[in-house]
Image 1 (cartoon, rainbow, N blue to C red):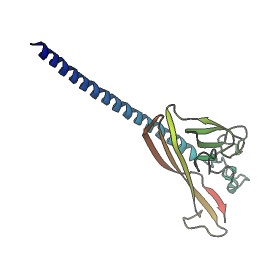
Image 2: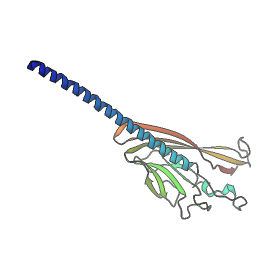
Image 3: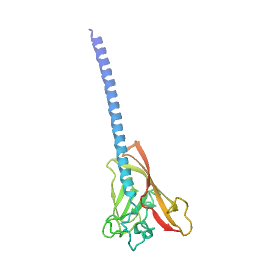
Image 4: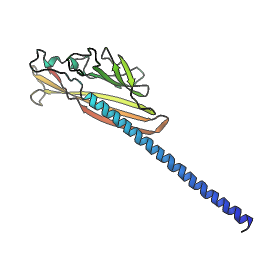
Length: 217
């Protein structure tokens, strides 16, 4: 074997090695992106499930049959305590915050020493939940970031619709009749891995609140 043949063989070997190394690096980068995408999807699904379970409780009141209080006077479904949409600050998107309440300690009273004014909101790329409050407004109380490290929330959007019908039937309410208002809450949650805008995921969910609004026209 001549020196030229030896050099050509070495060059071909180096080219083959470089090709294999490049293929391995691309495969490793692709695997990392896929793992990141799976992690993002898992975290967003877990977050939506958390909010769904909590929002279904909205308006729960530990009312006892035979009580002097009327079901129409549910303190957890008054205009200030029933589910309401807002936003944390003027810089956040409209309807990116929802506040609601339910009888957590079962004593029939709102926020009497225990947290019963709940909420979720988007703030500066994070998802926050309310940890204390003295008023129902979205700007009230202390909020805690529950976003997993490395994930940025890009969209949090709530919708709230109330479908009214007569209590005994599904027919429309008439004057003087007892009416039921079924509340439907929609959630759109989108996020991405921080610094990786190409890794995104969006989830949507609709919730039927278990505790309806009761009223008389």
